[in-house]
Length: 122
Length: 110
Image 1 (cartoon, each protein chain N blue to C red):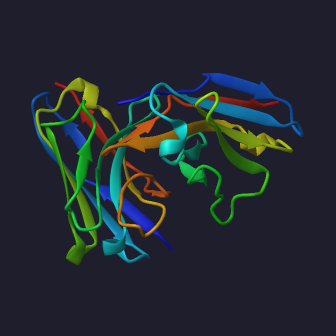
Image 2 (image 1 turned 120 degrees about the horizontal axis):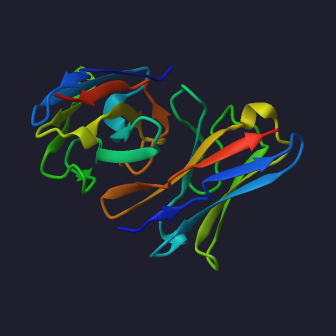
């Protein structure tokens, strides 16, 4: 069974940093692209960032480019999101999502975790 | 980047058929696969259609997807509506190195 468990969320002050983690199990992690998708309270889904199977290709939404960094450790079956210069607009539930098929690319989100909540507030 | 536009809300009765639309603002809808996700209140999204018209195992065949190049849009059709189909539905595609989500459609079945 595919399992994705996010952690690292919490309350952070504006301008602060946070590192999210996603622990993956139930599939061969290094065969799949991975993504972070966020959902602000009462709002829709917003893709944040994606990474291919070996970390050689990444993408970022314009809203986070230059502030967030996605990475993965295939030896630890883990995905990460380093978030810097956080603002109130970054407050959201952050989902880790695995690509649908083992193509290595990250262009869809087949399986989703339960999310970790990030609140940016002074 | 392009925008995917979805109607904000749709209502239909149980047993009927509903079609949700997703229109791409620029570039061809056929150039990149479209996915559809269902999100029930308080739950994480799940995939109901991937690669335009494929259903993951466990998704009933009441759900079907298609694309229409003439209107540059994708559609999710749900037949034999059940009250449990009431949820938010999001279309998603990609371009270059980025994914794009539609704004979502709230489907009410009553």
